Image 1 (tube, helix red, strand yellow):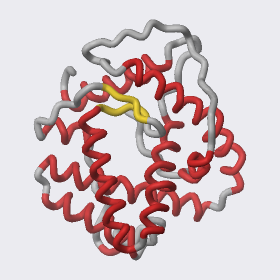
Image 2 (cartoon, helix red, strand yellow):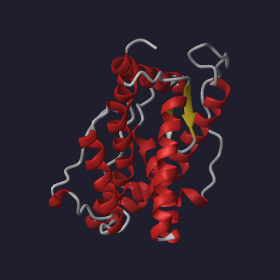
Image 3 (cartoon, one colour):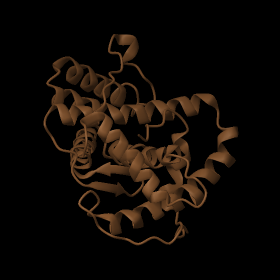
Length: 232
C-alpha cells in the first residue's frame, strides 16, 4: 500500500504550474478485464503520475530538500497529516466508532484554525491524540465493496468507491474552511490536498528494470485490498 508522506510535502507545491512529458515504458497490450475495466484510462494516469515524479517531484526534492529548514519540513508534514484527519473521520463513521469520529474531527478543527491550516499540531497537547485506522478495512467492515481499480492523477492507486468517499470528504473540508477564509480554503486545496497527495507518489513500489510498472503497482494495491478485505 502506498503510505501517506509524513514530511517533504513541500516538493509538490510547484506541481500546479508544472508540465511533464509522457513516460516511456515497455509495450504492453491494453485489455480491459473484470478486475481492471478502466485499464486504458488507468495506464494514461500511471504514465502521467510517473512523469510528474520523474520530471518535477524528484528534481525538486533533490534540489531544494537539503536546504529546507527542519521546522518547515515539520510544519508541512503536519499540514499533510491534518488533511488525512478527514479520512479518519470517515474511517470512524464506517466503523461506527464515535470516539474516532469526535477525536479526528476535533483535531481537524483545532489544527485547521488555531494550528494555521495544520502547520502546527495543537490538538495533541490538548489531549486529542492522532487516531489510526485502515480505511480499506473500515470500508470492508461496513460492507462497502472496493469497486473497480482506478489510478488518480497526482494521487495514484485507489478504487472507485474509496476515491468517491474521500473526494466527498475533501470537498466538505474545503467548504468548511471557506467559512473561515476563502484564501485559506484555496491554499489548503492546492498546496496540501493536491500537493501533498502528489508528493506521496514518490513512495510507490520500486519497479524492477524491464517490468511493466503499471502491472506491478496494480498488483501491490490489489494485495493490500486482499489483506484488508479478502479476495477481490
